[in-house]
Every structure is written in C-alpha cells, then in structure tokens.
Length: 254
Image (tube, rainbow, N blue to C red):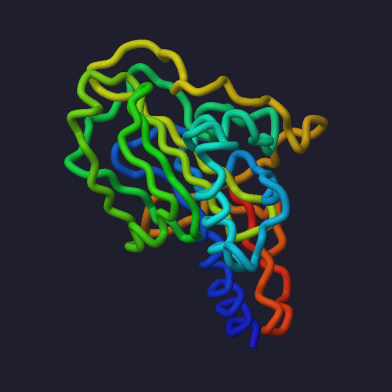
C-alpha cells in the first residue's frame, strides 16, 4: 500500500513541476546554476479594474481579452513596458529585468533557426525582444504555440548583432497573474548591456524580510527543475452557470 501511495503522490506532482515554463533554445544561464521554471513576479489581475465578464468572458479568456482591450491605451503599449511598470517581484533575489536568469560573458548562446520554450501551459500574452527590437508578440501564446515544448518561428534578422534576447510571458489563469521573464546573452555581443526599453521596472517585493528558500533540482530524464512549494494562487473566476470550483494549487517553483 505504501508503494501505491508513493506512486500516486508522484503522479499528482508531475503537473505541478511541468506547469510553468522557461526558454530552452537559445539557452539561458541561471542564478541557481540550473534551469528554473518558476515565475519571478506577479501582477494583480484587476490592474485594469474588475474584469467585465459579460463583455470579455470568464476565467483566463476574460483576462486575455481585458489585456487586449487595455494594453495599448493603459498598459504602456508593450508587454515589456506593462511588466516593468506593474510587476511585484517575488523576492529581492529576483532580477526585475531577467527574472531567474543571469549574465555570464563566457556562456553566450547562438541564435537558433527557431526558438524553443518548455511550453506555454497557461493562457496569456508573450513578447520577445532582441535588445530594444520587438521580435514577436502574441496575446495568447498557449493558443498560438500549444505544443510541448513550444516551437516558435521568429524573424532572425531582427536579432542580427543583438546582445541580449528577452522573453516575457504572463500566465493569467489566476487572480494574481504570473510573470515569467528570461534573458539570453547572444554570441557576437559583449557586456551585460542595457535592459530592453520601455522602463526600468519596479523593485517592489512580496517578501523582503526573508530569503529565498533553499531548493534542490529534481531528478528527471530532462533538464532539471527545482522542487519545493513556495507559493500558491487562487483560480480565476468561473461563469456563474457552473458550480464553484475549488482553488487552483498551481505552485510557484524556483
């Protein structure tokens, strides 16, 4: 019975580990020394006011449509600007421009023919920049790139001679939107360079009095990600015609 129980626990843990995402190709460098699928900051889901469900829909779809309606006029005109102005960092260990990724001059990456992301496992917008050049933007990257891992065509010419690639993704499945930001320093560039334009971002944190929990990578057959539950969020609103669902427990991972 103990073996069965352990198998059951392991099976239920798999979606939690794989429910977040990070850039795979080109490869980033990580503050922890190994890839992390955790979000680095959050944005309040009512940042534009209470979502008009009758107009925009319920749940994540309502959130995506709300962003569509407000990003240009109230959100700074780009995902980068929106995040820079409104994000709340999970801790003071998070880089406001690059999340859990870090700069290492001796570990630059070559531009691939197409980009690869572990997967956009929740609805929400994403944006890719090479230095200040916006290379790609979608309001719902899960719908646009549903594969696991996600293969992302892009205009490679826009990244010619760029120093840094930055990818932003906001997962809007919960009342607190999760912000995933990765930076990759590219071959041919030099130095850390300036962050992508549209603002410097906020250093506000949700927890400035405690340090980031110690974590260890899980043993898997693929690139390791860290284990350890360090945050939970409630699910987004659902239509009134259905029975209320229990709170989502998609955990933040570092």
